[in-house]
Length: 207
Image 1 (cartoon, one colour):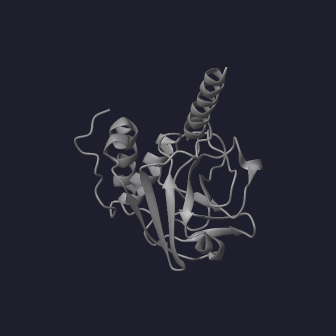
Image 2 (cartoon, helix red, strand yellow; image 1 turned 120 degrees about the vertical axis):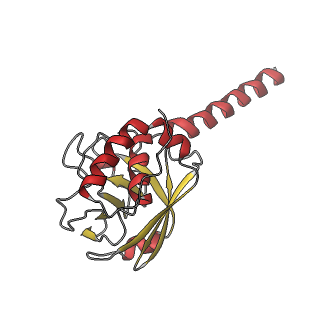
Image 3 (cartoon, rainbow, N blue to C red; image 1 turned 90 degrees about the vertical axis):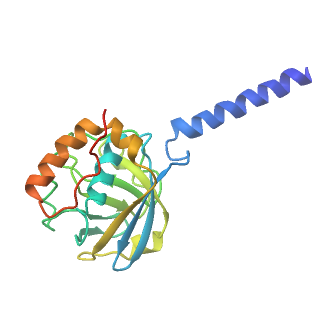
């Protein structure tokens, strides 16, 4: 009887680990991070490429090409969120293309990073960082990571504060290989509309 009981407990434990790694989404350790350096300080974000591969590939590509360098946070809603990533600085701009991100993860805690949009299939470059849990946004915006340090900086950011740089830490090769077709399309647009950007690093990658 004892053996059966302990076997049952072990199965429950295994099931919980699987749920934490897959079902919850935010619980599993991720290999990619972004360091958002601002005029108020640095924010370190864990990027969830497992649950939001397309969205993370887009964000990482834009960051690595220098798209976000010098852009501002153009929108602040106190005790809600701060939003940036618009090259026009007024909430109407983007990278010149739109895509449909993954609606998987939840806005279930402070420090969620999620894509701003104007409806399904309109994700671009604008993103926001939450000050608190915002469950009313679940199903509407693509969550792709969470703040792991620098939450005090998020809470201090205001309108016109500056994104100095966004640095991606970790190996993006596998992710970029899986998303090479989309990256190729996006980079063609970026090369035409923003010729001053750094060259893409996707050369030689195959899908």
